[in-house]
Image 1 (tube, rainbow, N blue to C red):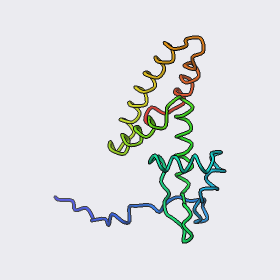
Image 2: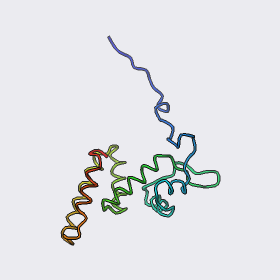
Image 3: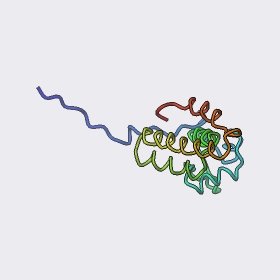
Image 4: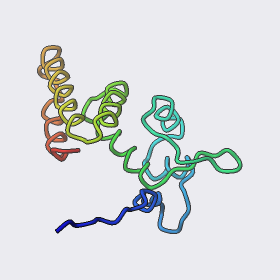
Length: 143
């Protein structure tokens, strides 16, 4: 007995972009306010490929979904752990290439270990390794 599965239109499976619940998108100033970052920092993230506006308004303003808030907070958390923006850019591209977070999480662990060892060798007394270890412990195993 053969079972036939219905063919699903892939466009139906793509959810609409999340927003503030009222259908409105965030302008860059709104995103900056919600993430406590400067507009310039957000523009830098965009230049580095870490953040992309979902679309532009008729007036040319960058418009972001609520997912951008999570992305900026994730970038901030990695910066708190001591990762540079180029390191974070490498993680993002690894994540996008892999299609899942497992490879990116392994890369985070490797970079963290390298960075922690470098700080320990440079200044053992002033090392922020315990703080970074506590922050890293707060990250999920599969980011």
